[in-house]
Each structure stands twice: as C-alpha cells, then as structure tokens.
Length: 360
Image 1 (cartoon, one colour):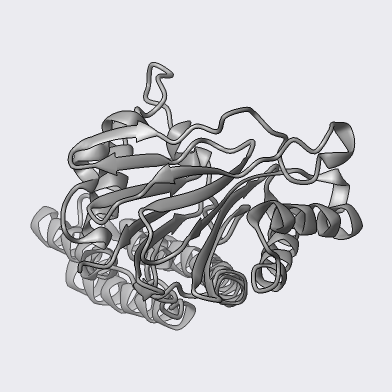
Image 2 (cartoon, helix red, strand yellow):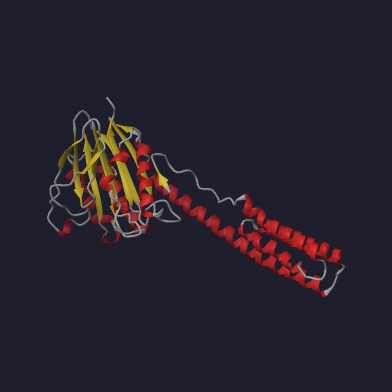
C-alpha cells in the first residue's frame, strides 16, 4: 500500500465480487438441472447443499440462511417431480441441507467478525499514520517534494520508517529514518524521533544539534534501547548546496540529468540512539544541489529489496527513472521497478523522499 502526500482514504469493508456471490446459486442450478435430466434413478438432491456450503465465502449470515432455504425448496420440488415425496432419500437430502446451512451460517458470522476487526485495525493504523506522518506539501520553501511510504505489514499501514519536511527561518530541514525492529515498539520509537525533530528543527543552529536532541530523546523515551538510522538534510533557497548529516543510513542518491551518484559522508557515524557506545563523530557535509538536480532519500526497504537470487535492488542505476519532470510520477516509476525486481513483494517497510528545487 503506497502512501503519498495525501492522507489515506478511510478503510471500508471488503466487497465480494459478483462471481463469488453468484457461485452458490450457479451450483444449485447445475445440480437441479442434472437431477431433472437424470430422473429419480440417481439421487442428486443432497448435492443441493453445495449452495449453502459455498455461500459463506462471499455472503453474510442472513443471505447464507436464505441460500439454505432456497436449497430446501428446490429439494422439495425436485423430490415431488421425481415422485420420491417423503421418502428416506428426500429426508436425508433435507437433513444434509439443514446441517450444511447451519455450519455455513456459523462460518459466515465468523468471517464477517474477522473482516470488521481488520477494518478496525486499519482505521487505527490510518489514524496513527496521520498523527505520525503528516502530509508533506508538494512545494515548501522553494523546494519541490514527493514522498512515498509502503508498510510491509499486511493488516497495518504504518511501521518503523519515518520522514518529515519542515521550513523554518528561510531553511528547509528534512529527516528520513528507519527504526530498528518492527511492530508497536518501532512505531513508538518513530514517534519519539519525529517529536524530537519537529521540536528541535525550529531552534537548533545546525543539523548536528538536531541529531544530539534526538539522541537525548531516544535515551529517555525509546523502548528496549532501539537505534535509528537517519539522514538529516538542510536546504537554503538561493544556494546551490544541500547540507547533510548521515547517522548510519544508506547514502542519498544525487541525480544530475540521467546520471546518479551517492552523496556519501566523509566518514561513517553511529545511528541515533547509540551515542553512548562511541564518540560523537557526526559531521555536516555539503553536496552540490543545483537548479536541475534531484536528491533521493530512501530507507533500506528499497536498497535491500532482493530478487529471487538474493541480489539487492541497484539503487545507483535508477537515476534515469527519476529524471522526469513529475516528481510523483518519478517515484511511482521507482516503486514499480523495485516491485518488478522483487517479483511483487516487499519484505520490509520502505519510504522515499524525492527533492528538487523550484523551477526558476
């Protein structure tokens, strides 16, 4: 499920296809036709229970019961047509239909309850998504932005990847990060990181100070000593540079024309939340970011996406996909290429931010 700059639509209960709804009735019609053609010599009547047996796949409890009633009526009419009347054979057929209908009613009730629970879970996930990951404007402080987020979780739309873009004091400050681990603890840690970034981005004099503030918040609030890889970036409109602090995260991809190169840091640094295990060696570095350049910030859900042979997705060769004038369309092309590489499955959450300067 991709999430862009717009909040997700409210979840709705799944609707069965018209074919799935029609299958029980088609099955009963086929059985009735076979019974009419074969006559009373062959007992097809118990097979009418196929209707209420198949109904729970797509129909609710009420309609499943109606399917069973219809099967009973058909069984009575066919028994009368065959001349078996109230024979043992027709009684066995009726008892079979009643038993299967009761089991189908129970199965349909359970299925509907599970579907409603899934809708509720997705509603909670969407609410958390809107609280944690605010919609990012397409234009902010002279910068164009496109964002995509996909959670690998089946029943939820949030995970441990996060992003934010803030304009303050004539500067645009950006974070993209990946929390170690999964599940609710990862979401809790993501909330701590986002809260610290949103608070410090307005006052901190530089990006290293923001990183220090996030470190302090993680030390006080993060569960289970989780760490977070992150990229912090700052763009000042009117300049041709972007300033970056890399906290153990995959290096951004700088795209010039159809060529791409990684904006690697001058030296490696620890992820956020691990400052107590080593000296503070985080340093800002600047990269040229001209009017026609683009920069892709991403999490390892993209760079570590594997194909069937275990080969990682080649991020460095995707520059041509991101060179079009439409940033949102460029990210759509990127994700389509990643999914093609993996065969349609993503085993980890992934987020991507594509930045470009406003056209002058």
